[in-house]
Image (cartoon, rainbow, N blue to C red; front, side):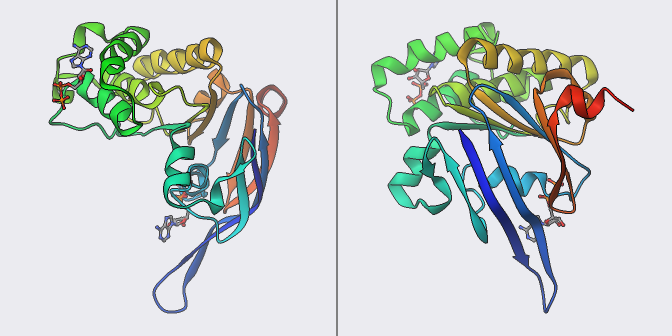
Length: 233
Ligand code: ADP
Ligand code: ADP
């Protein structure tokens, strides 16, 4: 479903310094799986994740999603392809001057939904993430876990095939993290959305991922079933 072939990302620095943030990564992520990418800070996880929705272009190599080479798309074709890919962030990235419902509705408007269909879909998705009673609150009135539920609601409202998660629980306490991971698992199981998640927390990988790639210095240094990679000494 998601195919990365020999992806490299180079950042040119000042003078002669340059960083190869992603170094020749090839991956095949299957439809319906929860795929984790783990590694220490600076390993290249975030840069790699951003190539999946073309927020970051590979310097060389290609990214293909459902047969479309997203790494080559521009303009309308890219915007259309991106509508099939939701994303959530460590610090939630909500719009602070809009209510919970308006945050979710905004993504549907951007995706071209008919006005009359937006309110019922917002209500449905807020019910799914357990925020019906917070629809008219502003982000500042919510806990961290509730903010991430809004982030998830916004990301999945338009029925994406893929949900990209950038350190989704790193700003949350352990207990709240567990509830967010359970919600992601439920979304994967009930809606069949493929999840690609990056984290520096091994616990997150062990809790919900089916397969994992371990990154170091821009390279994938190990990959396989979570059980096989972490269950044995
Ligand atoms: P991780 O997500 O694993 O912490 P990143 O993908 O953020 O790693 O970063 C990988 C490397 O690329 C780091 O050395 C980082 O400093 C560098 N890097 C990331 N983004 C940029 C950028 N926009 N410009 C220059 N260097 C960058
Ligand atoms: P705008 O004037 O920008 O359309 P609105 O205040 O009308 O802003 O809200 C935007 C959208 O958010 C509405 O069209 C509606 O679909 C949705 N919305 C607002 N409040 C709720 C709510 N309590 N439950 C479900 N959807 C809501």
